[in-house]
Length: 291
Image (cartoon, rainbow, N blue to C red; front, side, top):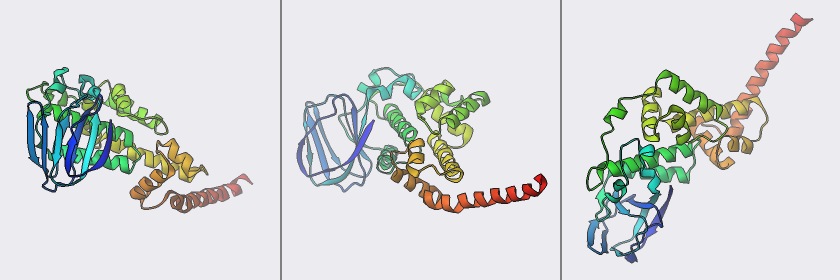
């Protein structure tokens, strides 16, 4: 999945899609501009409000889009067809689910708008559990599109799946897996496979069992690991950042400061010295016993 925020100027533009992905365009602010899409058998005129959504199917390369006034914040999100498979969604669907989506008319969906904003926010300001977060959000977006914006029912109800959860044994395996891979590659797919569940079902079952989403739990545990690494040794900040799957030291510093109110270096100076003083005091108390 990829995403970006774009500025679209007024005028007439060709209506094209991605080579192989479904394009989901979401108006992030809404300024009341009239947007008209035309193609063979399609003419859709929509007033662009906040959370207005337009879909474009894979390999689409016909038609035009007329925009009456500039659209400054349009989120473009590209979902591959593999995002709509039963294994990813935890739903009994077939390939017709993609073709059943309503590409010919715009619609408003505040939930999709919130998901889109969260995706773009994560891409702009990385957090400690960015990858599982974006995977989970993309999965939720695909499920929402299939369940509520298809021409005809394309899936069975997930009520029976929702009634299942993570038993203690499977939950313990997942938590052990997370702890063992905090300084490695942690993906939603990997965690779901440990639990023998689809990603969609796993995310729901994990939150039900733990009280937090998988990405939130991983984020908290990675920041806890960061605190331990800062206190225990002199490992460089960039090495800690990369070990905990941040793209760079700046992203790590931003996330750490947001969570703790301190920059990593400041945290190390304050709490690392306290740990050293405590350890020194314990050694001094032990020395007379050894004499």
